[in-house]
Length: 121
Image (cartoon, rainbow, N blue to C red; front, side, top):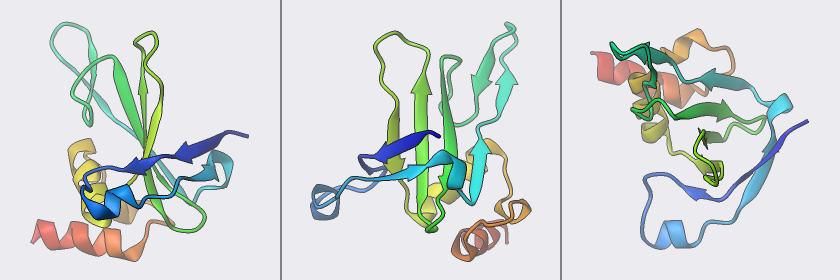
């Protein structure tokens, strides 16, 4: 079982970000897990759609309690993993960059699906 600690917000600043209380979740008990997609860059490198480089990846999670979090991992030595909580709009931004339709994932929060659909139309 992998337990991840969420240490802050992604894309949130100011007082709300300063009042963040760390929390954790178990990756085996999540509702949804979306791995980041990659594309070849013409030089045989798999480049992450969400990070824009070949040495880091991200995974989006919807926890058992319905919270949204993203885990950043890097192949660079000494670069620790980071796990941040996402607001709905930032989760949708991530899904769009990744080429993922949230309605295809059972357990995806309704507000994420609605926000995604509102951007399509």
